[in-house]
Amino acid sequence: MQQSGSERVYTFPVLDRSIRLAVLLSGSGTTLQRFLDLITAGQLCGEVCCVVSSRKDAYGLVRASQHGVPTLIAVRKEYPTMEEHSAAINDFLMPFQPDLILLAGFMVLYCPPQGMEMRVMNVHPALLPLFGGKGFYGHHVHEAVLNAGVKVSGATVHFVDTTYDTGPIILQKPVMVEEDDTPDTLAERVQAAERDIYPEAVRLFSQGRLRVEGHRVRITS
Image 1 (cartoon, rainbow, N blue to C red):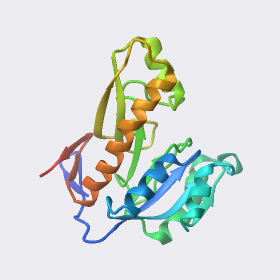
Image 2: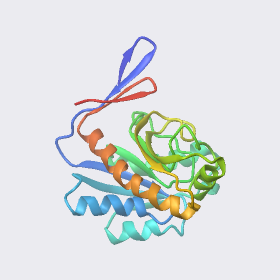
Image 3: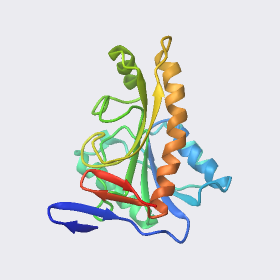
């Protein structure tokens, strides 16, 4: 991290090896599977080094086990505070030395460990800052989009800060809202956009091409 006056500037080194990814999830693990498939196919130079689930019954744990990835179950209600929950997760993550932490449908507010600021990413099923914040996830987002009557939705990849969906935006991809859309049909197209831009954001990070200036992310050549 660099400091420029009162504005914080983050730059990241080019990685000369596979990027080490930690994945936090709460559900089926389709985003985890997307990254595992890309890595297996040689389309992403990376390794999923560990997985954390906030639910004991998350199918993402099965996907991780099938690939021999170490896992932790950390149920939020089993910890008195959010800080203690995050601390337990971080105690598990840090020995794996991840370069980047990916939130993949992780339904709990998470505080990264010291030194990992701007090294945590999330993908959101709308064009932030619209339709973001606590309670806006999954079909709740698509229902809100349709109820609002907007003509364009999409997907956003952003760095994670201390509140829901407010971190610096890295990439966005728009998706047109069709007249006959339902939450399910809109979700299908938005998820396709997510599958495109989330891996691309990880590639840009590993190539040292992301520069965070205050709340703005610049993509360098």
